[in-house]
Length: 72
Image 1: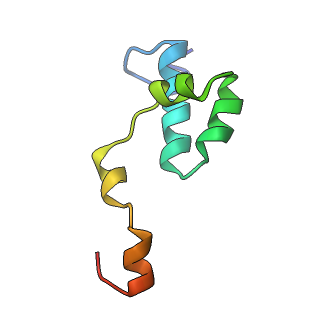
Image 2: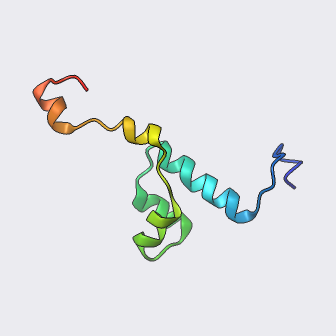
Image 3: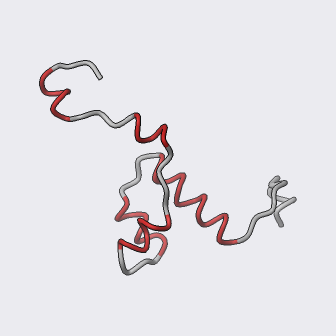
């Protein structure tokens, strides 16, 4: 099935599920929506399941800077 999908690295269902959730998060999907899609009852489960990459953290703009017109 992996070869048919063009995936050449070892992967499990968990790997694909994790990638799906991570891509949603990086695309800006609300974590509560991801929680619902994954079927987690507790948000803590979802937040442990996902990880943020450094590049995502660097894109965060302080709302106060935006209001005051400061450059990031």
